Image (cartoon, rainbow, N blue to C red; front, side):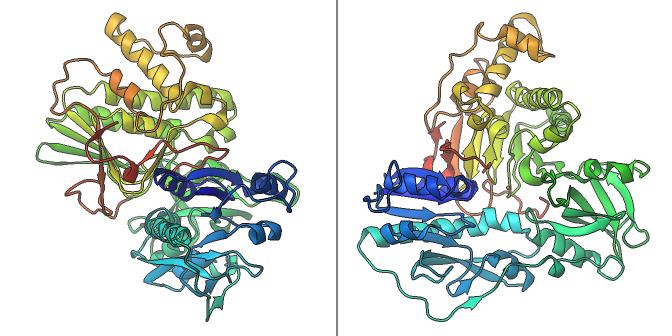
Length: 540
C-alpha cells in the first residue's frame, strides 16, 4: 500500500513506524504537520492541493500528532491516529494523566480521525505495563512505543484485509495537564514526591518553578539523601546538575529552561548549572559522574552511560573518554558499552552549542570530543568491544556504536546516523565522523597520532585520501567503521554482527539495573536500521 505518515515531528516513534512498515513492503512518504495545512493538502492531493483530486495514498497514519488533520483530508483518505491511551480515553495529555493517577497499566489505541478529537472508531489497541519510578519520556520510548508498534501493525493488517473498525462506546475526556498539578512545595513535599513530579514531566514540559525570583522549567529528579539543607535552597553542583533541598532530603535537577517571556525568544533547555550559573558559582562541586558507571563480572567489563536526553556535550565526551581509558587498563577480554534501557545516545549537544559564547568553536570542540571517543573504541584491539544498545541511537552516538566489534540491539531500537538537517547529508550517514576518525586512524598507523585542532586545518586536508562521499544503504551503516579496523585483530569473532535481542534486556543475561531516549529528525530522513529489521547474526 501507499501510506502517508503525518507527524508533528519525525520523532523516534514516527521513525520506528516508518522503518517497520517499509520492511513490510509498503511505499511511504512523510509530511510534517508543522509545515502547515497547505503542505499537508499538497502531499495528499498533489500540486495545488485541490480537495476534489483523488488522494495519492491508500492510507494515512499519524504516529505522533498534536494538531488536527484537515477535514477535507480525513474525509477523502482514511486517517489513523495513534493515541497514547486505552480505548475510551480522550484528550491531549493522556500519558501525563496516567502517571498522575498512578496507573499500573495503560494502553495505545489506533483510531480513525473524525470531527471530534479521539472519538473515531477503533482499528486496534494494545496494552502495556507502567514500571514503577519510570520517567514519562522513558516510558514513551519504551513500553508505549512497543505497544504502539503492535497496534499500528494490527491496524494496517485489518485495513488491508478489508475489515471495519469498531465504534467507541464509553469514553472519558480529560483536558490538558495543568502546571498546578505539578507544583512543588519544597517545604512540605518529600524527596520521593518531588522526584516523582519531575520524572512525570520529563522531557516535556518540565516542572515550572521559581529559583531566586525567576521562573524556570525544571527537569531530572534523581533523589539525594546525603546532602541536607533548608528546604528549597540550592546545595551543590555535580557534572552540570544542581542539588536542591526538599523537606526530608534533596533532588538533583539535571536540566533547566527559563520560562518564555511573552514576545521573547523560547528558552533553551540546558544543564541546570549552566542555566542557573548566576546562582550556583559559590556552591561546592560534588565528586563523581552518575551518568557513567563501570563494573566487572569475571573477564567482562561493563561501561554503562546514560546522559539526560541522550545528548553528549564536550564535557560529557571527555568524561566518557576518561572512563574508556580506565576500562582499557583492566584485565578483561570483553568490554560492553551502554546497556541502559533508554537512549544509547543522540550525538553532540546542540543546546549547549547554541548557548555557548562562540557556538562555532563549541560545535567544533564537541565534534572533536565525540570523535575522540569513537577513535578510542576503534583502537581498542586487545579485547572484544560490544555496543549494547538498550535504546535509540542517533548521529555521532550511532557511529560510536558502529565502532564496536558487535552491536546488540533491543528489539525496536531506532538507529539514525544522518546529519541532513545540518547540511551534511551529502557525506552520507555518519559521514562527518566516519571520514574524520578514518583519517586519524590511518595517520596513526603511518606517522603517529595526528589530531586536527582547528576547522581550517581539517578543511585544508579534506579530499586527500578521504572515502568518496556516498550514502550507505540500510544494513551497511557500520561498514566503514569495520573497514577502519587494523587487520589481524586479536579478538574472537571480530566481524561486526548485529544481534536483535527480544525483550527489555539489552543483551543476554544483562543485569536489570534501575540506574539509568531515536534521535529526532524530519524532512524525509530515513532511519538506517532498527533491531527487528536486522536479522540474527547479519553482518552490518
